[in-house]
Length: 445
Image (cartoon, rainbow, N blue to C red; front, side, top):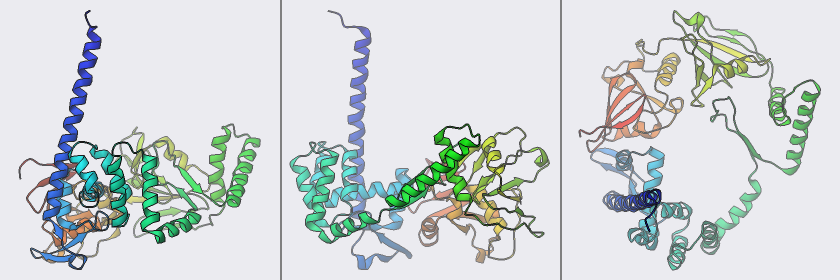
């Protein structure tokens, strides 16, 4: 009997996909073996030797796996992570997972090399065991090996808990006591979506939670009685903001003749509005953000998208107008000079206006793949001030503290191709272009 053509095609595709999965896992296993060999070649022998001089530069051994795993060279690790094409924190975590398996879970590591356990599964196990004492990790490794492939995640978590109880009773007792201190209230203001919304999550004392719920319910009910036609859920969300704003004190009107900054302050929401001064500024749509964070405006008439720098997301001008029009909102209008301008100053200290311009230009740390926001970074003189480098936006580069150290104390180097575009060279000669579009590894070394 002839097979249906569509059935044959589907079976062929599934077979091809299955072969691709096997090939992918085999390549990852080879990468694991190479990372393990790299780690063996870059071990800092002991905690006492964690700060050593390597080729004249201060290098620090860093622990990226659990107790008993080796310390590895911090600067060599940076280069490995860059070659892997991962972010600094993500790459560090990944290399740590491999080292955790190779040194502290040897039976699991052998199972990965033999194809009995997939790499991704071993990585998740490594995350669970990384904080365990060496004996406890060995306990988990032995029990996993006895039932490799047949242990579910819930069973694995119970196994880790048992290992803590057996080998680290002090930690078990501390965790039991800490469970009574898990109360928190988090407003994720750094994760604003395109509609201007944020998530709030909390774990409260039952009595506090009851009182808060009653207050929100009363406010939402009152809004409904006063004619608010939104749903109960939306009115409850509005009630949270109304309750919060009642606690804010009256501020003052401030006008700074030197900087041109004007602040009209009032009780309630605080909004910072940066307006680019151009020939179209009068017709540009004003855009801003709340809570003292920064959103740049467009000077192109009709543009309906703004950007909240700390939230790192686009927001519509309709949402921005809604934020600005809330009664009791504090609005700051601050002139922002051309980001491409070159205005050096004589001092080493960096004026606020230069800091703001550089951070608005570059947004994040300019080390390859680093996502750290520029507002939390140091500003590095690309050409040192002591060697004639100007204190000017064209010579200033945001680098997070970790990568500022790497540039200063190791053989990582960069060139400013033009403001906002940087060519990095790693200690072993790998090159990376970092610009507005992200990090691009370059073929020529």
